[in-house]
Length: 254
Image (cartoon, rainbow, N blue to C red; front, side):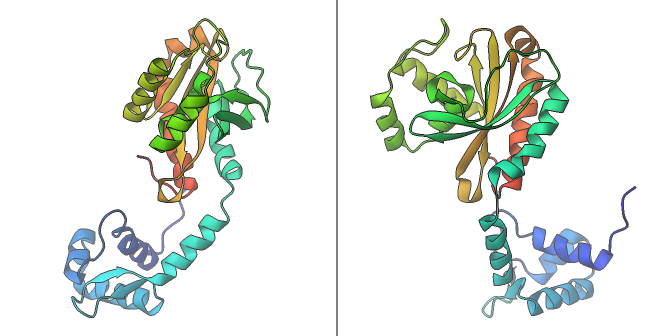
């Protein structure tokens, strides 16, 4: 059963939420209209928030903007984020929803590393272990990282890749990889169709941090026949899970 809200606190937080995104300043009248509150109520809320430095009033325009106290609180939160800890409950939830095995991976120097794993309830032959590394071009999670690298860094990686077939389906040339990475940028997810391990399919999505820094990749994988028969629903689930993880890690989805 939901706990009753303290209305004044809820209204104050709603005021702050109006400044999310591109909105920098709002007038008292604009805030009152958007929240469907009386001007006198909004004036008292703004006065309280201003006294605590959560908002400030422009001396030139008289409009309101976010205050420095939120910067301090946000910085404290960001400095204490542990990506693995923040993402594990979502990995666990995703494995429960899909019945498939979920992974969290980091990236370094053209390779991905599994840093967390939750086994699904469905029969699986995914023998991955925490600490295992894989060439980025041969995994859905790796394609996520490569797709969003700065152009010069990606070019450097491409110059040094030795395309070695892990299965008959592994990407084996630069042109094919670049085409695949463009799909990742457009679609917001990546897939591995038996490219790393024959018989296994994975779908992955990015986890973003503060200032759109790519922190990690989250994936769901299992037997090819089972994964592909539910392809659309599994892709929706991994995108939603990664978006939730991004929010927990201080980022926004692109």
